[in-house]
Amino acid sequence: MSAHTDHLAHGHDGHHDDHGEGDIHFSFRDYMTGFVLAVILTAIPFWLVMGEVFESSRTTAIVILALAGIQVVVHMVYFLHMNARVESGWSMIALIFTIIVVVIALAGSLWVMFHLDANMMPSHDMLDMMKQP
Image 1 (cartoon, one colour):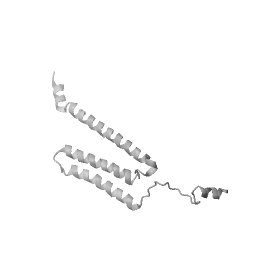
Image 2 (cartoon, rainbow, N blue to C red):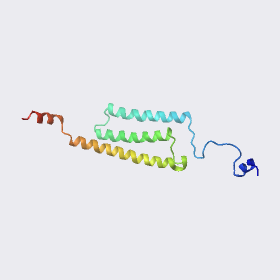
Image 3 (cartoon, rainbow, N blue to C red):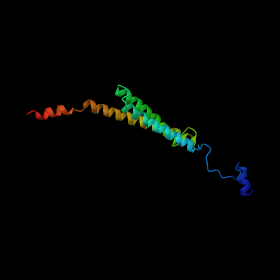
């Protein structure tokens, strides 16, 4: 068999395909959709804080964290092109790992900030201690 017929025998038609079977191609419209969603998901928390929409700051923080999580997914789907089909599922493994790291980082940060707030001495008590003989 010649090199050309051997190539055809393996199911190739001589056409060079640069794209894998799981590649996803995004259009300008897809990028604009991701951009608009990212802007909206940034504007809503700004409005929640500046407009003092919720009376409880805890509720505001929970809503902002939820919107931040949604924004991470929007960025991963629209800009990083991650889904379950790309690269034989490795993107899904990367997504799961990212979620675990983000949850650990957020939970650790909130835990540290809570304990710093609960255990730090207020500044007025410090001034009173300095005035004592």
